[in-house]
Every structure is written in structure tokens, then in C-alpha cells.
Amino acid sequence: MKILAIDSSGLTATVAVLEDERMTAEYTINHKKTHSQTLVPMLDEIKAMTELDLTTVDAIAVAKGPGSFTGLRIGSATAKGLGLALDKPLVAVSTLEALAMNAWGSDKLICPMMDARREQVYTGLYRFEDGELKVVKEDCAISVEELCGIIDKMGEDVLFLGDGVPVYKEVIDKLLRVTHTYAPPHMSRQRAGALAVLAARYFEEGRIETAAAHKPEYLRVSQAERVKAEKEGAAKC
Image 1: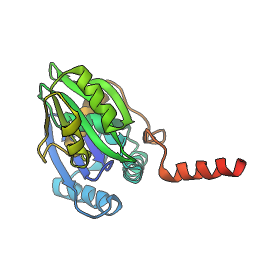
Image 2: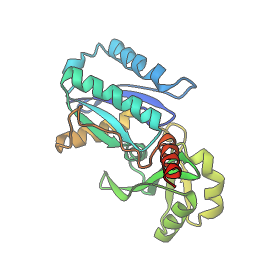
Image 3: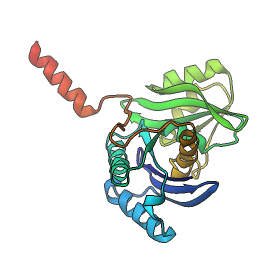
């Protein structure tokens, strides 16, 4: 099985190729340029360096969200274009679940957290059971205060990771009563390798979709859509 994985849902752009039990390549960058400038060149570099024939790929994995509206659109458009051109299925994986996969083997409650702006985070709760990542709380967009309240009620040690950590670390330290730690930098951002591992499992379970059918899952409407709705509401008054 050969999986090509793409994730541009957050600040990091990342591409990987997983072939059976071997991670053939992983290219991750988080440095100023937009994903529209980096994602395809990264893919081309991996293709050249590994002599990858894209027609041999079994499926294309993509982070389906939540995350940056622009980033998700870029990643989805890239994956859909490849899927349509190559006639390959897509495997859509939760951005937060893939982030949690970075902490494989942890015995703590795992809380991936992405800055959703407007004083909210995209988050979910996960744990590993017998080596398998299990969902404890489904993906959602909530305030850090509400998240801390939920975790405190569970009473478990928790590991935080994601780009929401540096934004809300002081708030978490102030509000959270349970023991908590923060993942180091190499674990705390999106990595297409983790996405690919989950996608391989999904592929074996038949959890695939056509490129034409794929749509990102934003969890919230965009700011532009909110402004439009507010203007339309005001016009009707």
C-alpha cells in the first residue's frame, strides 16, 4: 500500500509518502510563505527525490479540517486535483486526530488545540488504548475556558499540542487544575507522516471517498460568510 498525504490545514505545510511500513519521505515547513507557494513545490521535490511515480499511489490522504479556511481549501484543491487526474480515491482525516497521532504511545489524555481566533480553539480529546487512537471528545470549536472545565471534570493528566498552545498557554496554566504538560516542538504541529499512518488504517477499513465528492469540514463559517449573513440580516430589517 502506498499513501500520499497532504496537510495544509494550519500554519504548517506538510507532505509525506508512506509505503507499507516504511515512511519513504516527509517534508514539513513552517516559515512565512503561504501554502499556495509551498505545497506543490514540496510535492514536486518529494516526487523527484524519491523517484515517485504518482500512478503507483493507492490513495491520497488529506487533512479534512478543522483549520484555516484558506489552508484547508488549498490542501483539498490539491488533493482533489491529484485524485481526479490520477483516478485515485481520497482518504479524509481529521486534522486534530492526525495531530493527536503525533503523541503515539502516550498514556495521557491528548488534547490537540488549534487557534480558531475569536477567543476559540478547534479541539478534541483523544487517548491511546492498546496502541489504537480513540476519540474521547469529537472535534469542536469552543473557548479555552470551556475546554479547561471539561478536562478538569475528567480528572486525568493531559498533554496539549498544536498551534493554539502558545496562544493560550498562560490561560491554561491559570485555569486548569489537573496535571498537564505540553508537547515539544517536533510533536506539536501537523505532520503528514502521522496523517498517512491514520489514512492507511482508514483505507484498509474502506473509509475512502472520490475526489469529486470530497469537501473540507470547517466546523465554523468563515468571517466573510458571517459578514455577508449579517449584512443580509440587516437589509431585511
